[in-house]
Length: 143
Image (cartoon, rainbow, N blue to C red; front, side, top):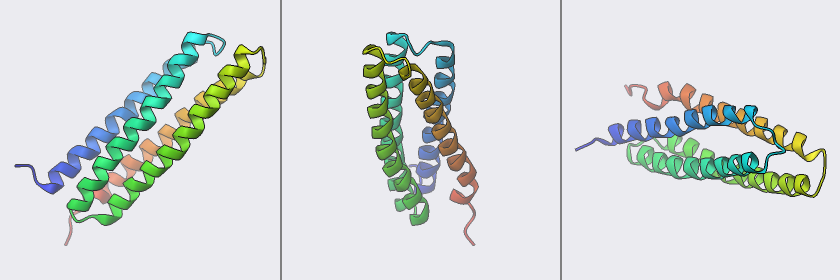
């Protein structure tokens, strides 16, 4: 049987992998033009799924750390859930608005789409860095 600390470690590792995948998958969109409807639809879908995955996995991690007796880590992961919910809604709505503007003929929309793309990538990298930096504190030996 897996201990609560083992489950917490597994939840953390499982959380980090989608963040790393998203970082690499998002980089490939620098090769695509934001005027391409297929590329922007894929980018929107990637953001949509990413934020949902982060919410689910951080929720599982928060429960795991709460059961392991580490409420501070559980609260930190719950904060990531809340941020992913709010930021995810913002990004997807903004992407939808800029895609509609681009399709309506707004020449500035492609620049806005690129800025959203870069902003989402940076958000993910900051979030990934925070989770990785917190790992030693998550699993510090208790004396």
